[in-house]
Length: 558
Image (cartoon, rainbow, N blue to C red):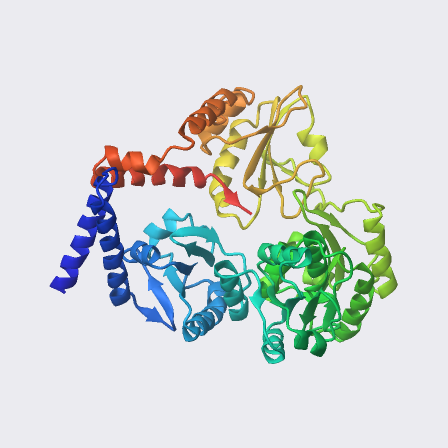
């Protein structure tokens, strides 16, 4: 391997010298840059292993592959992750399809549990995480999890917004290959309608678009004038656009028809469900193996027909282990199903519960219409108040006794909002107990906790775990605690009445913002290259990453 080793040393040497020469006016800089990239590409081609047409990336080859590959989708995975295992065959199938087409789009994968340097650099927090690199610049992958959806998303990101279709056979083949395909029929592709169609196509990544001006295609598919048609392999099979050909109207038409009237919630459909524009969802929780499953699903479907484009109708198989967390989120158990719930997505994610358990068509229709008419009150989960809720130094709060305790202005009340499965909450638990013990004899202070997976509050929305909030004595203020989670820091914070030890002050935050404004527009990486040797730069970056990780550890996102 001496030749390869020498080549790698040369690449590294050339990289450094390219940086040193970056301000030179001589054209030799451009020559060296081209040589660098050429060598990187050769090294990449010779040295990167493939598994089922997917490039295997690691700490040693990641940068060179990204730099030398114009388009590449990278999966950051963990070997033990169930969702990663489910994605693997579809991911490989997508890589194979692109390779057989001769596409210059590549797919890669990186074991984030082993190749930790790269994983930390891109702040990988969950698995699988997919990032698409175009000319070395990453964006989050927003597509589906099937091979077809992966390929379609990548082609959309790297090609024209709509495929040019010529001839009946090509058009039918295009439509037949997709679960959903949208075709623009325009005799003049420079017309305002065609431009609006292409604008819509460019803005939507989860649908495949084609465009044609072929008279034979118009005739065969029974399109009489310029129009947009959505073809699908479910429900009525085809939807013709009606109205003025404006981009927003076309987009609304597609969003209202691209999903089945009733959608099963799966890992594959989740992206379309949550990524779409319809934010009102009614969910039917039911065991697919139940004897009345077919009847209830049909009644649910009949109820859905009048709310197309307004409310998304979704059913969830409660027999699937992956769906247990969703049941918990709505305060349900398998003993409660079948059941109906409605949720309005947004910053607050407001939930609604029917007055009774009747799930026939008319009851569901009335429930949804009452929601749209603003007649329903939000449903807030609450456990029963435990008999011994105030027995221990740390008081146990639930939805129904929260206001009485936390908003008692005769005391300062410090509350931990936690989730039983949260790792950071488990780490905080013994410290929180000691904090309660420390203040148990202080009549002016209450230390409390609330399980936010089973209890909800109308005026306080918890977005991450653990969340710590302080309700000061003689005040309507609510103080969000963001300081260190040590007994010393928490004690200091409480003893000061919430005035000390709570992270940066407003003045400090303002100063930080000003500093960022001063840096805005400057090439910070360029400054580092000029002022530090490579070894010094690497050490500084490690220190910065370490500090960032410490800060990140203070939050455990939902």
